[in-house]
Length: 114
Image 1: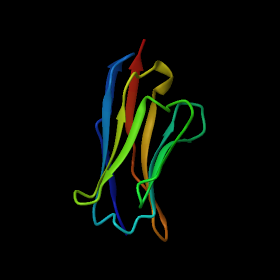
Image 2: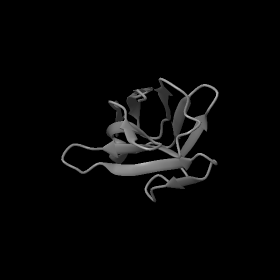
Image 3: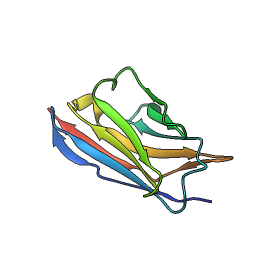
Image 4: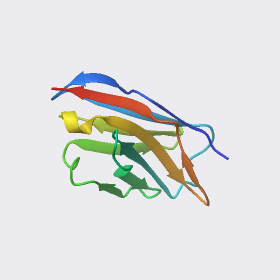
């Protein structure tokens, strides 16, 4: 079992930046994939970005060139640097990790005002 706790969300104006963090309760070395998903009101949860154990990254087209995912295995933390934020980025952002089983955090709210 691993608990994931997100932080760093908040209210920001369009064009601004936020950095989300996801702290794990134990080592993330064996997590094959970690990532961020988001869910806006009335919409399905969607993939934002993932990072493999080897460091390979993938991004949704909507955030490519604006968001950057990284992981610090020593600190047991996953990050999402979000730049040039747009109102359509407003959503509840969830941290995800998968080894044998998938794990989810409770989410952190990001609100981008126009």
